[in-house]
Structure formats: structure tokens, C-alpha cells
Length: 556
Image (tube, rainbow, N blue to C red):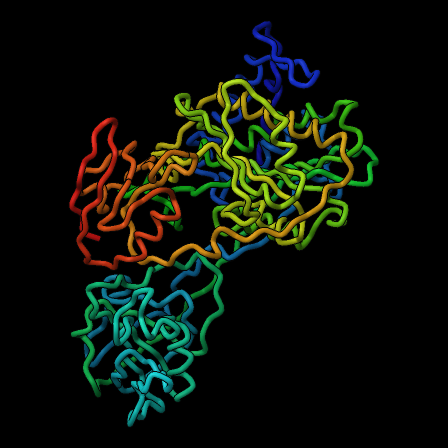
């Protein structure tokens, strides 16, 4: 189907510094060269960002299958390394999409667009305004009072009577889809949303997420002045769902053991960044995703030969390179629903997502999920890698593939060297990685599994997800936090152009210590502070920059 790439460069033998890792002789130069070789290919422009469902992802999958074969992993899917799955790539407009009001034809995407959950169909009718389209009897509020919308097209404001913020009395009624369902239940033929609240953003035009469609067409019109009570309207929505295929790549070390250790990393990324997730603002560019997550994928390949030693025979090892992680953990969710073995026999899952940017000045390895088994803390305490500090969190839930396994009561650990200014931007390139730091992460992972190799099946523990108590907020500074930072405050790893922090003059490396009257001690108090503001608010942000404190006036 695609060219099978030559992977004979794997594990080149040279004669440089040798590390002794629990009895395993590892040549540091070899490891660094190994990581470089894989990452420079996976993060090359020729793969166009490895977006799930594209030729670039297919080329990456073929490369990984060859690499798995080269390092001695066995296929498990009917003698294939591939586990394909289908997913909604996007929804496309058709020639049936139009909107006309009176004798004026509106331009798709310029004047209006259908919402991603819109139903299909054509409607002719009369426009009726129904305020916010909310009926809240317990609050003595009803926009439909004395309104007859049977067979009509209703105009609905996307805000609420007291705005859109976490403290709104109408918080339970903010959802647009629930308002559409209410309108449909009252006999409306279609809904057109408009926005008169300059404190609230317009809906996002994004068709990449699979959502259940409503029964009636739903649109957003940018200029509410185009719509008048009683006007005649014709509209049609013909959005078509476009499905594509992606592939998990799976290899196996079969030691005929009763239990298996699963080791995973996602290999997909954002393509050109046009289907969501990108933090870049500018002309279309390839998002190569060297750290996210060619780094974890390269680590996956490098670990495979190590665990084929005699000392690891107590367990089988399943290596999975997931696709579709950037689109919502699609590959790991598919695997969990279609496992290649009995999940009761899976001892644990180790996930490597962004392990390529260890900070030389503050070399912190973040390990998430330590609360998912009572043994994790004691095991991790026994591991010592020179020049490497460890920061742990307990939750088994996070924005990466280990979450899918956690929800099947499997102990998990997620390895991560922190975000940075290139995160989800075209600048996340192979030359920006710390390959020596990756060797340290490799040493840690090897020692971890060596500890586990002498143990029986470990117990699972449920954790309280960190997100459960995360404050809700509707504004942002436009920064990428440094999740590996363990000092006082919230350190900024990257600043997004055109957003409040950038406009005010804040920089990467600044540590936020106060927002308005709210002291910022860590990531949680930072989010708690954000939750107190809404769009349009002004406040003062105080940051620590080196040995100086600086004050910035920002507008959300």
C-alpha cells in the first residue's frame, strides 16, 4: 500500500559511554542516536503532522510496524501489526446548504454557518424571536410565554438573562443543544442563534467532533440585524459526515505468562492544525509534533528490546502506538473496547506522552497516576536516576491514553516532561528536543519495570480525578502553564500571540503570583483565580521575573 521504509538504522552499535541500568548495558550514544533517528522521521514535513486519517498518519503507521518487527515484537492482529478503526473526521457542507431571508441570499461561513449538532433538512417559514429560548419555571422565567412557535423558525440569543458565567442563576440552561430541543418540542421547525452579548464568544465552527444531531436544522447568523420578526425565511442544512480510518500499531512479547504489562504512546498529531487543538495563530503550517508525541513513540520502540531479556519473563509485554489521541483518545478507546487479550490479565499500563523536553536547568519528570495502585509510591521511591527529579500526581484521569485504561480498573502511570512554548505549534520540531534527557527517562522506565518484574499482579485503586474539583472558568490569559514547575506560583511556559498575556507584555518564564486580589500559589489556585473573571474584565497580574516582581494590566 505504502512504501516499507528501511529501519536498518535501529540500534546502531558504537563505542561510547555505557550505562549500567539494573544489569543492562546501554550505550548512551546509541540511545540518543536511536531517538534522533525515529523522531527526525516521524516529525519530518513529509508526514505532514501525522493527523489521524491522513496519508501522513498511514506512513507513520507503516514505519512503526517495520520498527516493531525489527526489534522483535510479534504481531497480534491476524499476523498484522495494525488495528484499524473508523472515526468521524469532519462534517462537510453540500450543495443543499443555503439560507435566504426575504430576497437576500446569505453567504455560507461569511454570514452564517450550521452548528455541528444541526439536524439536516429544508425549511420555509416565518421568523419569531424567543429571547434566550429558556424556560425555567423554578426561576419564574419563560421566554416562550404567550409565544406561538408552531411551524416557525425561532431566533434565539446564545447568552442568558444574567449572562454566561459560573455564577449565573441560569447555568443549567446555558447549553445550546438543550434550547434547540426545547424549541423543537414546542413545534419550531428550525433554530437560528444570534449573539448580542459582547461578553460572550460566538459558537465555534468545528465539525470534527462526533455529536448526536438534533431533529431540526440549527444555524448561527453573525449579524442579528439581518433577521426581523415576521420575515419569511428559507434554509437548508445538508451536512454530511465524513469518516476516515486510522490505525493503532500493536506489537507483543509473548512469554506465555499469566499477566501482561501494556506500554503505550500515541503517534498521531495535529496535521496542519486546522481541525482543532493548535495554539498557533498564523498562516497554515505543518505541526510536526516532535515532543507530542514522536518522543513517546520513539521511547516505545527503544524499550522493546530491553524487555525481551530473561529477567522480564514473568510478564508478557504489549506495545501499543495509538492513533487518534489528539481527537479525543480515539485509538485507546477503540482498543479498550476491542482488546487483543482479556483485560483482566493486564497488570498495568504505562503511557509516555511528551517525554522529549526535559528541562536541563530543572530536570523534572512528571509521573501522573500514582494513586491508581497502592504500590506505586513505594516502587517509585526505590528508583534513582542521576540528574533527574520526580514530581507525582495521584489521579488516573488526564488528557492522554492512560485514562482509557484507568476506567477499566487497570493501574496506570503517565510519564511527561512538561509543556513548553512550542506545545501544539509548528515549532515543535525534532531539533528542539533534549535527547540526553530522554536517556534519563529511559533509565527511569527501565528501572521501574525491573522492579515490577519481581512482583505479582498489582492491586488497582480508584482515585479522585483532579478534574473533579477543577474550577469552571470562561476566560484565559492565553498562556501554556509549566506543569512540571514545583515552586511558588504558576510558571508560564509559553505565551500565545494576540491573547491577553501577550498583549500585556508577559513572557515565557514569568511566574504568576497574584491575579487581582487572588494569590496564586500553584496551578489549582491559578484556575480558581481565573474562575472569578469574565470576558471584558480588567485586572492586575503580578509575576516574578527573575529577582524582580512586575505588574501587568490585562483585559480578558
